[in-house]
Length: 395
Image (cartoon, rainbow, N blue to C red; front, side, top):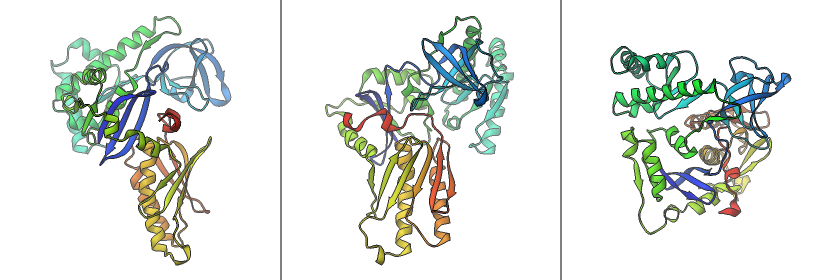
């Protein structure tokens, strides 16, 4: 995947391309006040017993919704609490918070939980054992000072799949130490800071997104803005594999025109998407869920075989998996595929769809098919959908 980072009307745009097709798109507002990852000293404002949650005030009228499942214990009204933003506000809902603080790097995540070394289950057993051995040996060696070891042993370390791309073990160890020391500093400051103070500001949204991209899929990052180029380069100053992928575009022809970003965004926001077979999708977001309708197009249904409907449905499944990621659709998704009579064809379609969405970095599940032939899906929410980030009339 090539990632284009450029100034866009509402802020900074990150656009992912694969084989000249737009596969991801996000617009990050420069002026956004409350960002995912920010940490505040808040005050419990209101307890919601029926919801097992509370509201935490972080200054002015700003409140964060805090479910007790995101805490180590229930809180009392008026209590001070160190809270991290987990999800942005959306559709009239307050931002979601957590007291389970965490800081993420390219290779590691450090959590405010009891010490442990956890390795991503997506890695092969041999790789997991290798890195657990490397990290335990580092703790026993003189590579890490005794003071830093004390800090590391306070917190939980999670090793990400990107560790496979680390060129040097020291890069991983250095990031681990840096994240743990930063988290330790935040926890200590939080114990003495006044209420409503933001004690940690997460990196720019687009920098965080770059760190979340799998290195297996990233070919290069191209930007036409020197400030962005320097910011991205600085963020990966100690990560050689990323520095090598960053390129400054200096041609006179605009970068956004070179990749036809405007027209591709218009396609990504339109309700109707044509398929190569002649069929099409209609995507309708509503308040409660997103409905996707699969149509066979202008074909004469009387003369069309079950095999043709199977072909259209399978092509639609591929496009649906792409559109869900591109548009960042989340929550409940209902898909009305073309009706097929054979049960084995229905089962095969569900398997195809499940296999396609399993590649999504956001947790996505195909729940099954209802008695009416509707396919039910769910997708976790982390970012706003594309249609909330940018309006088609603004393109």
